[in-house]
Image (cartoon, rainbow, N blue to C red; front, side, top):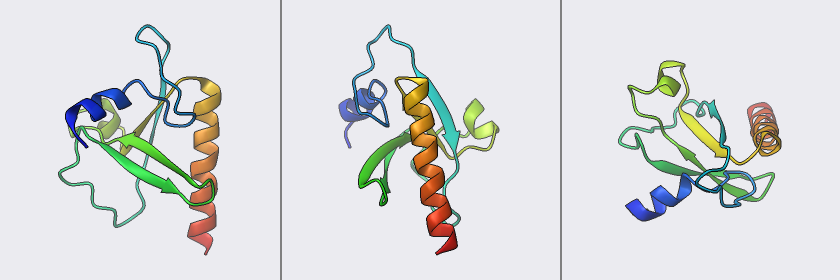
Length: 103
């Protein structure tokens, strides 16, 4: 993914994929990768994540080692356009985790 594609993802909702206006509100939250996922060399880049149950591909930012998100222990940061999209995304991630951790 080139720099212009990466920059564009800062203005796209990770859940509904709608464009977030420059002056629009942004909602975000952190999440953790599954054990064994290697994110080395991906700091400050967007990575794609497949949600099999939703048949959906998401994009998440890998925070830098000096960021607040990394300090709080998060491996990913998701950017959304609303609280509803943030909650829907969280619910989908939890469902994937629960199904695949039990399976």
